[in-house]
Image 1 (cartoon, rainbow, N blue to C red):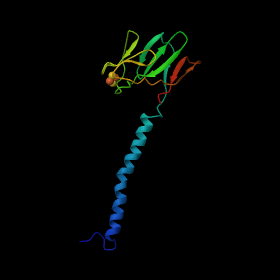
Image 2: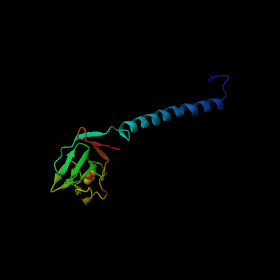
Image 3: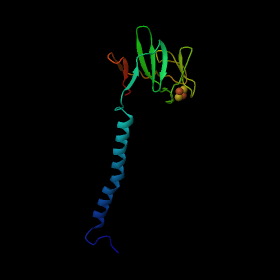
Image 4: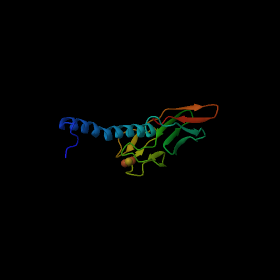
Length: 135
Ligand code: FES
């Protein structure tokens, strides 16, 4: 039994080669959608600008406020990506392997050796909100 008497083996293999690309293309499209959802096109976070001076952790971000300055860092540890969830003696502590960062996001105890990612933000004076870009 032949596949198709009008189709040569060479043509059949050519079509099969194209068919193998379908899952590959589907995977590229899915990865692109995931990247858009979790990557650079994430919505900014809006937080009320009511933090007291010092370090505050709010979900994905760390707010470092002084009398005349405000910095925002990602709460993602630069070692293996755990979420930093604790402030101890004015240092940020990662629960996974114990890395500690100072108020400038610089590691003061390993295993992490890389600074926390500083996030850009703006303050909406009309609503008194901090609008933080997560990308
Ligand atoms: S992930 Fe934070 S110290 Fe390892």
